[in-house]
Image (cartoon, rainbow, N blue to C red):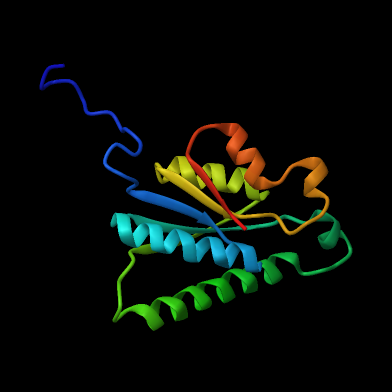
Length: 153
């Protein structure tokens, strides 16, 4: 290798530098965020908190203000994260960012992980019974095989 060759991005060579965690307001996603926050703190990594706002065309067809509802959830999640960060700021600090996308959770997390050059992805275990048959977001992320994926119960 010569000095003139560009340096290529290499995931996780010195430990994770960017950890993506998916949150959706469920208890398991908050446990995942806490776990990812601890990992980010210990590794001095950036914690990228990602909420994917679902697109519910059926609800919209029935006149339900879906976009407003998912925006409210996003704002609520940001407020909860800021509150948790404020509670521990004198103990330790974690660099974090909040990102939100519209779409299905799997594609939103893949987009976030790719865009942010994530070294690791953390998600909560699915709490929906139907995911045992169809496959959860966590299983789909693992099968994608592009990042280490941690599933927090």
